[in-house]
Length: 95
Image (cartoon, rainbow, N blue to C red; front, side, top):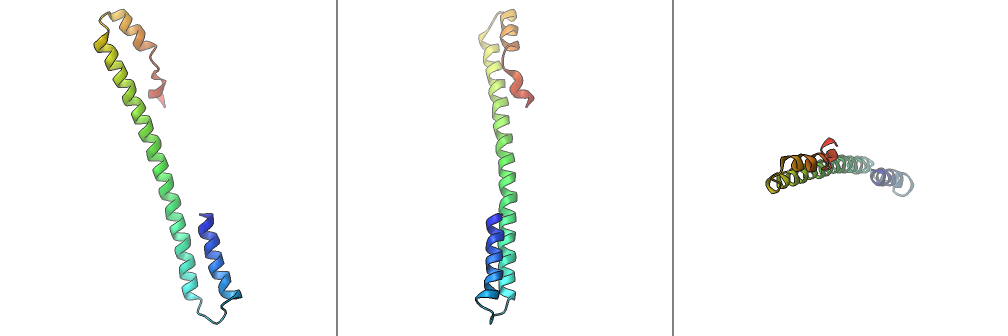
């Protein structure tokens, strides 16, 4: 976002210092587009980061369920099964 604002300011101020004979409407429109593209990029980056974090959490939950399922199919002794499942790292599900 900072780069977009910097480029917008460069365009606007370059008009005043370097090209004082041209119309400024195009420069203002370009500056607005720089800021808009920067804003959209920042928002999309946040959405992607949240989706990635949620995907990691869901994968951890699926892994935990799969591991408990394997314990259920492998272990025949009920007391030993409950003991192993209770000590299984279920804190992953609480995130």
